[in-house]
Amino acid sequence: MGAVQFVNILDFMMVMPLGPDFAPVLGIANADLGWVGGSYTAASAVAGIISSLFIDKLDRKTALLGALTGLMLATAFGGFAWDFRSLLASRILAGICGGPATSMAWSIVADVVEPARRGQAMGKVMGAFSLAAVFGVPFGLEVAHLHDWTTPFFTTAVMGAFIIVMTIKLMPSMRAHLAHAGNTVSPHHLFSLLIRPLNALTYLYVVFAMLASFTIIPNISAYVQFNLHFPRTDLGWLYGIGGVVSFFTMRMTGRMIDRFSASFTSFISTITYVLVLCLMFIYPLPGTPVIVFFMLFMFAMGMRNVSSTTLATKIPTPQERAGFMSLFSCVQGAAMSLGAFLSTDVLTENADHSLNGMSKLATASVFISCFVPMLMRVVEKHLHRPQ
Image 1 (tube, one colour):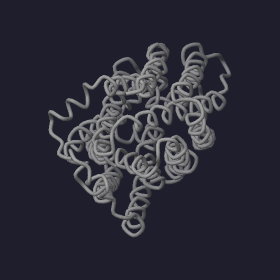
Image 2: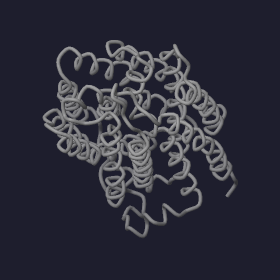
Image 3: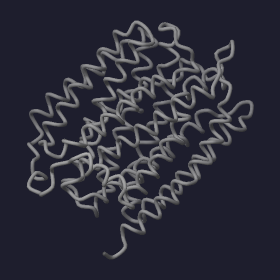
Image 4: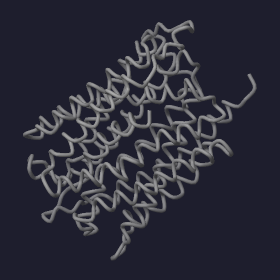
């Protein structure tokens, strides 16, 4: 599942740092790059709703292979994009398959790891995010710098094809969840999953967490290059160092969750995130140490993602887990796309390609972020309450 998540997350992560590279070739303004990231997450949200109707009735292996195959074909198509619309089409197709692939990976881990050790397990699997940042994204940036922006798309597609073959050979069929009653999922049942109080609180904290993050994330590469004057040639190193920080953060976070709580780690991540936004985006000073603040940013993101997802996996029953996590992925995608789309409305581009409006986005993100640990604490209290 770590390998699956690596290629899935790499497909998503590499596009946004490459934005300033393919934008002039495809005729895209830097201020509109949020559409590229948002199209993927919006498609992922829609796919989450549709797949949750039937995904718990499938062998986990079959569902995972179908999603991965579609994702890699869409990624290859992205390398052939000739304008803004064709690139958006490829990212929409990738999102349709990438969202279910993520929810399946979470469901598989939750199926085989007991709750007492699930924090560490989720931290290890989600460490794929860090590996993608440490190795995948810097490699993609360097290849694009030396060759052209299409090469990372084709490389990722080939890598994904290899992982598909290994999944076929090494992963066993997983059908134990089919023995439980209630695998037939109807729109009414999905609605009931959404409105259950504990579930609704979970989805709400996810909305706030992703909305706060994705007003910022799609625009970081352009912002540090054109506003903070960070050299393009060092961008790969920047993401690599940030990925190393995230790699160790996710493992540390898993142990902290198992020892303390998910809301406690979320509180730490929120404090760090607010600090970064204030000093890097809202009140940046001349000579802002981009590397230091980017490391702190990745630390905060890693801790937030592991804590929010780990808590979510403890809520559904086994027979509803894949459906619940599909909706979880859907809510994530919807909030991420909303944040990315909103950023395109707020931001404008100057003649030197620098961005106006990042301080406004960062201020809104600070406000929204403060609700995340509070809501997670409420969910934990209800989850641990004797029935």
